[in-house]
Image (tube, one colour):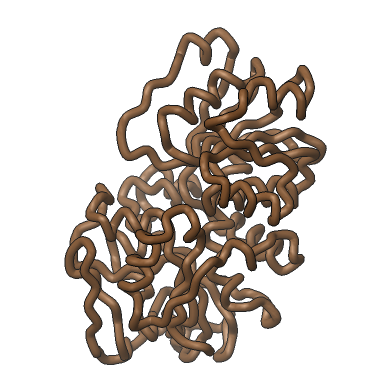
Length: 343
């Protein structure tokens, strides 16, 4: 089989290797689709702080079960599946309290351990979730980033039903956070970005209000759209100084700000406002199994628009061309899919 290895930043080569042998508790998956995400792009540029080279990427993907270990009885050959890519120790404090997604020794497939950028991928049965037979492999590869969004929204204890939500950042994760909020009953969602293309895309995906953060007075927009009570929940999905400042500045007293964006460098927060307004700054990382299940549910019920999000497809052997295309297209390349196989 072929596998793609990023040998150094900006360089991918292919190797022909044996199809992996599985143990009694493992499953062999034929990989069909792989999505490229922002963290993958950081690896491509050599700017991911927790990834070394060579590395086999691929952490948001879908596939079909082709072989089962003798101890695997929850799946059958031909099942469509997705995989939770976390490798965790099971012994640290977070793991012992079911917070394995923030394990002290966390490794993630495609970053600190091998990913699915190969024609066949073996994985422990505990990390696999089945998706409906009628769900496309494209949607299956969206499960992972949507699970990020579901987990982020769940970090606040508010009931989303009937609430007003502000999302800063309209990239893939911000878009999915906004869509997920709507799908879970939010009354109105405002999303902001600097990209006209991504704002138009947000409208296409059913987001109520899309605002150019460089032109509009956000505090005024919030009052006009949400009224004097402002946003019930704010989610920062950029990872930039300007947006975390906006989030804290515009938060209603006593409300939550969820920090979803990944920060490449240290940011400053006005803790005077946090203290005086009794704000809660809440971090969020990855997801748990229940978030994967929620993502699968939302996708299977067609509550999330995915067609507009997937802007490009590349064949497996053109993996590097996909990254080059992302470089050329900038904000117009939203979710790029690698077609490892048709089925």
